[in-house]
Length: 242
Image (tube, rainbow, N blue to C red; front, side, top):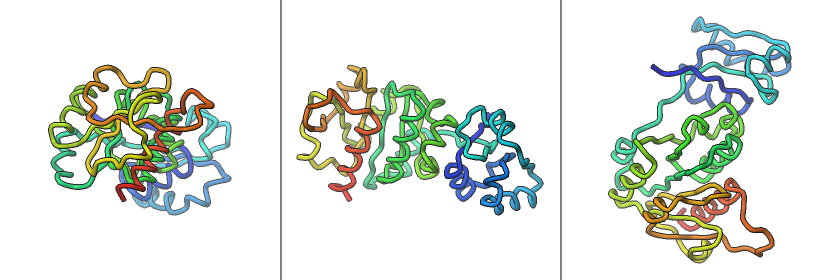
């Protein structure tokens, strides 16, 4: 059975309403933002789903955060798509998938998903799926979750192996080793593998890589935050692949 989940943040909730309104079970609004969400309130009233107008203090209790931006939705979450189903659907298409290992900070995850949506990444794999679809990550993504597909398999290694078996190039990333990102056009079908800033990719994923890249810079800092590094890589991938 699907577990209900709370989503908050104005842009995240607006995007969810525009893309999958039937998934909304209940809503809470504070007075300052209620007018902006008149169409949502009307839809909920017409379909006999509840909504409540709250004072800011009550909204903070409902959303369990100060960063609710005046709205919180109780929703049925989308189930992650199995990798083999995704591969069947996208057979032969130009495709870029992002695989995330050891990245559990929801604000980093949300920023990464926002970048994926901006640069046309269709699928996102994570070894921490609950953090990936947490309320904090969805708010930080500013609606980006509605443009990507969360993927799943038994393990991250199994998932990436399935992509490799289906002709995807596997692109490893590192702050120290690999070819210059800006001197290499990425393959038309690839999985870009990102590890945490502290630990990087595990040996298992490094050994699967068919390509390895790094982001050259001044060297004035040791490394980039993972969300910043993802932005640079996906931006270049978009530029060179179209």
